[in-house]
Length: 258
Image (cartoon, rainbow, N blue to C red; front, side):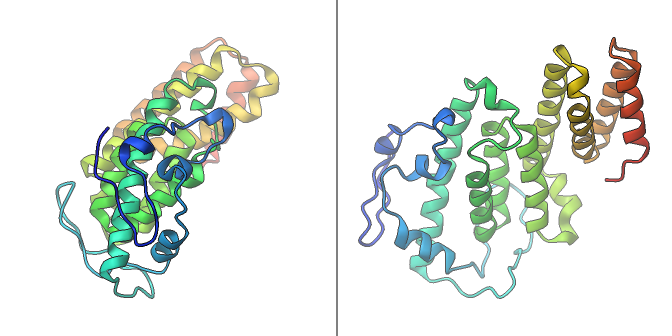
């Protein structure tokens, strides 16, 4: 991967080729931000990012544009701060892409509730929200490809919707970017439920019921998702699992509130 290095005043930043030699290693707990910047000392950059926010919407990147999602107490951003924000976002998206390539070969962490990259992915979402709604859409597309944990995908969906204007939540959910992210989350839950059922024991029942509860919240986001979830319940009811497990699931679904 060859690209022009991003230059910050007084901060040496490697080229994309240099960044690529620091792949993400889940087993070592190396955070996503470390993957993104390699050995860069980005203190001034991060401080500049944290001290700025946008007052204008960038050009459309993902289709239909929405009004700016203003932050409370927002201040105009300087050109230098805007440069930092865009540069950090580009490098973060590169790291997210690298994360996806590695995650497919890291099966033990695929379904983890809190994989080591969770907070770094959320940090990138926060940065995208500061840049504007279309950057959030681009982030959602990247997260759908790079994140495999259904729990993290669900957290990303809910946090992204909270960061956007509540008046437009339903419109956001209908966009291709959010639709792809929600669909990927639902697929990940289906894969995880099937994976757990293979070797499920009575000691796992409580955790499995909690998984079903979390999954329902994700499937409730779309009409098709609810149909898929009902199919899951019917398969569980007809399956070879014990009567006790099905009774627990039935009770949980009866008292469920999104």
